[in-house]
Image (cartoon, rainbow, N blue to C red; front, side, top):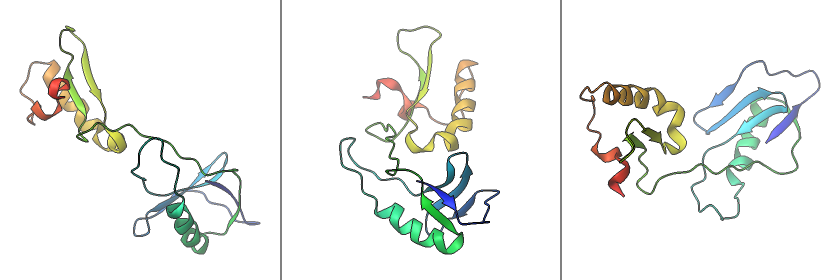
Length: 138
């Protein structure tokens, strides 16, 4: 959700409350408040309890104004059934390599995935057993 700031207030950098699980970020659309992930089926109706709880605490930390969006944003992030990414060569497609399916951990795991993929592409033995990440495991 995006918010305006109360008169005279300005947020110059992001602020994270790790204990309560939210982040305030200055954006062009206003001050963005994000909360944790909701693990649910793709077609499930959204639940806004996390956002409501985060907003209540965030208002004590920073003078948030009115909500700017008509409805809170909810975005689906794809996850594979075993919650592991696919990393490795594409079967039957010489020179095609795969690295996807990190779900909510793409930014965190991206550098490690890149290093492992580079090791495999160079013909080196990867630092990690890559069998659990093969595309043909399904």
